[in-house]
Amino acid sequence: MTSQPNNPLHGLTLEQILTELVDRYGWESLGAVININCFNHEPSMKSSLKFLRRTPWAREEVEALYLRGRR
Image 1 (cartoon, rainbow, N blue to C red):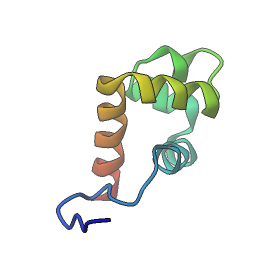
Image 2: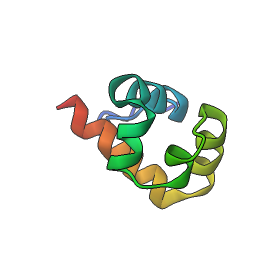
Image 3: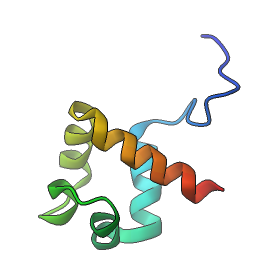
């Protein structure tokens, strides 16, 4: 495995990122910030991860929100 010093998400899984965001914001606030159905209608970790893994633009928004919160 190669080192990725310029990648702030290196070593983090999508599940870890989403769990931290849900803990910080809650599903309702997360759905207000990133308006996608898996956060707004009967949200669950499993359905959200499935959607985010299949939808690059949504995953990018989640990752960007995570990075903004780390600053």
